[in-house]
Length: 452
Image (tube, rainbow, N blue to C red; front, side, top):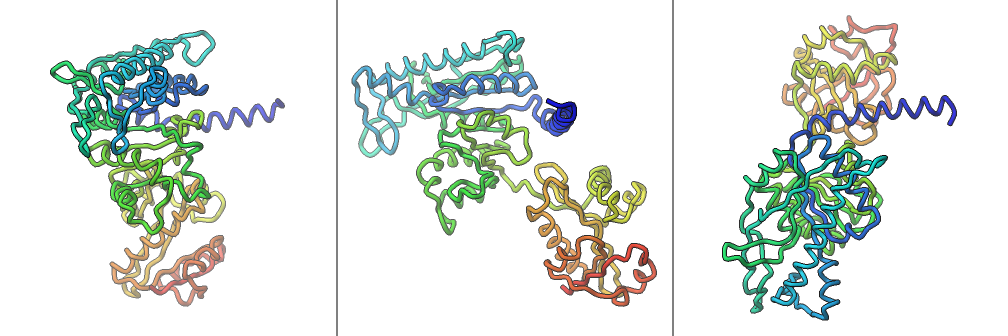
């Protein structure tokens, strides 16, 4: 590696590390529930997944792991030459098959605990010292009789001992929960991982519930794959998909993703802040989803993550970060921090998941029923994604609400963009007189006007 390449690599590393710092601060002491099926345990990448779990724990995230064991259970049933009946997708668990379930689940549980206990030198687990704890946290009840068939030891979650789990998390333990539940009468029930993870997340008022799907190469950022879920969904949008109320319901949603989406949506409806659906096949999937702005999967939230709001005095620093590079290039007129503080009520900011992506200002000229659109800026990492158009539409609505029906802008670089959005070239004579007197002939900005 040449010196220049080495320096570039170090610069990229420093930039990346700074970019993840806000997430590290935000996630500390938050409760995350990770639900994953038995398929991932047999995958060669599972050890990398364990390393990622260790990293999250070291950053102060309070982790509850809920594992499944479907392939291991099926293998044990095959070995015992036992056939089981399914009703509406659920396995009937008779006493003989329950024994196979307990053996398979127990084996998987201990394998995960063993991997989490690794501390080999020169590995990501070195000095990790993760304490893994388990317990009878899940009280279950039988599913009962469905379509005339008694599901016997197939059950569902009745209650989660949230206080006991919180106690372990506060001590810094990683809690590992299996898909088994116990009744007050001493019975054992075979549960689904999705049911357990969802109910645990709800009971703990978790910050996040994360499901690792078994679908191959699931990456919702790949916009060429029309069958995948969108990058972000609100609970309302998710329910529309589940009810097939969209114009073109997708095969993947119906066949493989639907059960996961149902569980994720229920969790958000019941108070979990956000749920994530990501593929287990992507190495480092959890880190990519949690520590990058757009992630690689689908995130479901109670409300939309994108907000437009009036700027507050606390936003001055963020606005300066957006506009200073454009001022340095001569695209925008320089504004001091003092002037921004004075004019902050003129600004609207666009946020996405707490990050400021854009801003714009509106200066009204009431006598002429006109307004100047100024300081429209989008963070360079998020341009060409429609954020500027969204911000402009919002400003136009705000303009008309103030009985202003003519919007004008002065620009030296973005004339074509504004023309594409309905503005027309004009002369300085068409500006309000007060603005004409302030026109800077050295900048020779183009005048563009849009009649609303």
